[in-house]
Image (cartoon, rainbow, N blue to C red; front, side, top):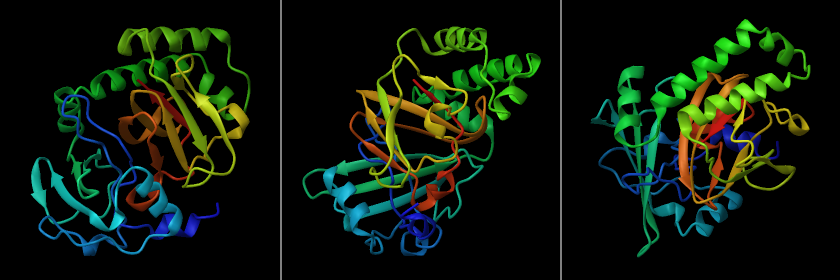
Length: 270
């Protein structure tokens, strides 16, 4: 990818634009890289390190001056100085903008166990618990019917699987899916892209269109509001991160969420 090295270095910043928790109107943001996290702490509103023009432009389009972003960290509800690595810690992050001066506050939360993560989802209407149940039902179905091996071999899955997936989606998330999602093969929204998920395809047990498996660097939301769960294995296995946001926003796998770049193999929208 054109910006692969930048994705690794990243800046210590939100990578979500215009995202938010349903019940608090706070925006879920994507936090910062370990390389630059030393510039930020719970009490230090330091400006972020220099960012490449493409990243600055994306923030500016959302009305945020990237030099006015501050970050706060919490672990199991307790404020801490920094959390340099989010992977495997059930990360949840919120970004709140101040339109008056184009500043923003990012709140990064991690959890020491799944129970606390699920409880946070319950409290904020994010349906983490329902997602866990959905995943387990799909994974069991795929294993019993030998679909994991079929998918890994690139074989066409039977229509019965998609019918089951759709039925399970309605059971746990309802009959109405959110909007469209457009994916890109770089960490900024240009290059190859395709509207890959929609109200008609709110779940993807694996990325089968145009060989998007392990290629996604960012995506744009085309909807009113959406929650996304991303996985690095087929059939919603290997949870990477849960995100949410408002329509028209861009999610970039950059900064501390650079570990998601080129790893997504399955995804759920609701």
